[in-house]
Length: 338
Image (cartoon, rainbow, N blue to C red):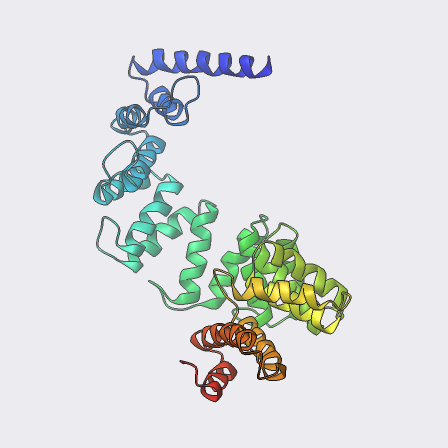
């Protein structure tokens, strides 16, 4: 019943928008484009959505101009055309529409549809950022950190990270915490770093959860607490952070904050080593474990020794490729490829 009522309401809205759109009312044309794009009140039709966005855009409707740019950028409902995307972003950007200003900044930053120009990107990011558009604020801060299109200025970056962090933006909270942890752009303050790592971690940001675990493990900015460290490592590890998976595995090996459990340790170490973003330390630790096991296997168990040697070789070479110096030395010892 509720579903039917919703569908009826959406269809009514579509018909109202259609009536006004056919009379040339730009906001209705834009809304009709959204209905066609999302399938609300009418069957989804991306080509028709693009057509209605264009009608509104050609009347100077900034959100429609920006949306048309997005469609050209992705090749949705229209043939992909980065130059057209940039052109429509510019029209909306010049009308002061912050999302389009940010998107135009991206075009200049990456050379999509326009000649690459990091300084021009900064101009548009700043325009959007000064309107409070969070995505642009983050890009602006990163530009100041990297010196991309502007002279490096960590202090200015920290100011922009703080603006976003105070609005509850998790990535900015994490970046601000990094500033306090490293003393980049602000006075080093480990306790303040923990405050911001925690805010981001409590929003589920795995990078912040991992960093908070490190703080608890090392007593940096907070009292040492192995159980808290393991708990935060687990949260990040379960989201797929390879560093957290490695550290959680090490917790199980040492019995730090959790009961000692070799099976759980190996589980997390393997996940870290086989991760899409693998941990070099986990690869090396597994290689070393296989090495110790290999050396203890009687010589007459040839097949089993070869199986363990194969595993050891794979993880050792992987760790070496990832830049682990101890793995490189181990590869040389066993004659593996570096």
